[in-house]
Image (cartoon, rainbow, N blue to C red):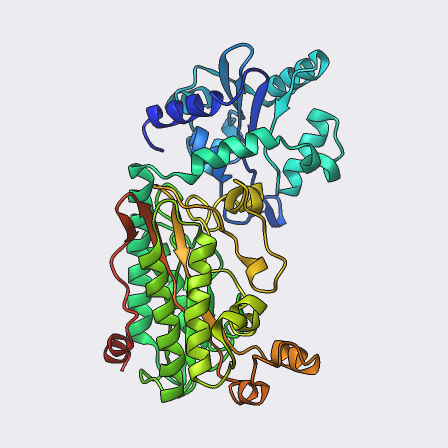
Length: 461
């Protein structure tokens, strides 16, 4: 946990957005893998961590605005529990570490919930993603578990997004700690990858790095020589000479802030001329996008800048044709670049995505496009100092997508499908870094992880 003053200040800042009612934050509980005493690795809810800091299952935070009091509710372990688990802190002690004077048991929380409901007190809560939490909310609030999220507080969502979006110096330092681990993850991969290995052999080495630092991955690792599948979590391929390996991975800091880095490189340590052409286009798009980042710049504009550079590069390779302005306007480039440029990052690798992507990345008059590719942009609104976001352009040759578009003669005025089919089997290339928006411009966070082609060939080869 941070110092208690951090959590006190965060809760005070949140309460400024409300006049009355109750702000209710359920923490997460453990989830059984196959029976209750054998749970998955526990990960606390990020908003609960942000405002209360308690990184243990079974806790609930409350801010009662009408009474001017804050509470932490949880379970005090018995001797039978302690025999198996070791000594455990009391609820009141954890509350004190969070700067909260009042604490209680779960029956106390249930009684308070009943009292608030009887009085008609407005209970603000965020959307829930765990089924167990939805069932508990049904019991406490008398709302069907299937409808719990329909009654989530839009006011609370907006207030939380506003606070969590802007990272303090303390939070940026945590992200840098996670990036220190990411550096070592990629260094391990660069120095150990060889043709003839299976992906899972490399996967085990990569994910062992955060574990050896008393950390965990911040999301399931994407690692495959079949990089045309954007989120490829299968690691069973044998890596052969000529293959491109794409790895999208991250670690968590001690306070659970995320890193998120993608690199693409040749298994053999040597790019082919065709791979160099596509890689240089993606790298140029990424560098230009990072350079463009400033407060007040809509991230949608940065995305479109990357799309333009990708379209120009693909046109040079004969994969697109016609005027680049028309290619971008019609979305023909999205056959090869079907996702958004990046997303917000913090306690969640896709920060606050559970609160609704449109609340986090849009709002302020920005509307999501319906055009293929651009519709997948997670962050479109104007950037502000303190935002941390990813910049991750990519080019992919997706057989089923090429086949479908060609069968429909879709945008054939701008796409050379015969040329596109020559690239089936190429895979995909994505390059990603984590960037802090400052008053002076962009700051790429963390120790630089090699991404220049000559550097990759030197290290891997």
